[in-house]
Length: 186
Image 1 (spheres, rainbow, N blue to C red):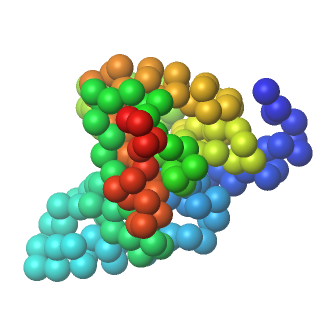
Image 2: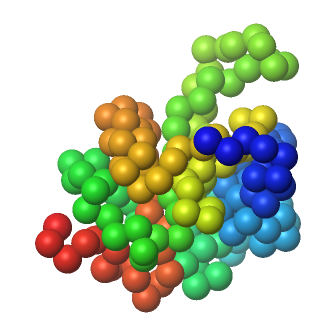
């Protein structure tokens, strides 16, 4: 595991602000802080539901908390798609050469400040992707990217994720690979 400053410098890792985990997940996926802005995602929300006063695709306070429809639309604007992965399948069947990365939706407990938990349950978006042959968890709530390892380590990581029924996995591919990201004998 390489946690040297040089290794960390080559990985773009956006940190959590407000309820913008979907924004952070997208920018971490594309490894570029300018891929999307809050204004971009807010515009997508408005376009998805132009006639609504309370937009169903983000928090009522407008602080973020975007849903999968916003993520899917944002990805399509860049020539990518996200496909929900059926947990009944083994992640080993995924052809990693056709995958840009993964976006996970996981439960997250709402806290007051940094340490005081509340009974409010929320959802959180995060990205896992390959950078220079190594897979990383680029969760915006982490201080640094979390080293997962090579492909076999990723498969074990994804199996573990999928063992929790409260977690959802979305496979991000280029649009042309969206229906053919499985290995041929799967």
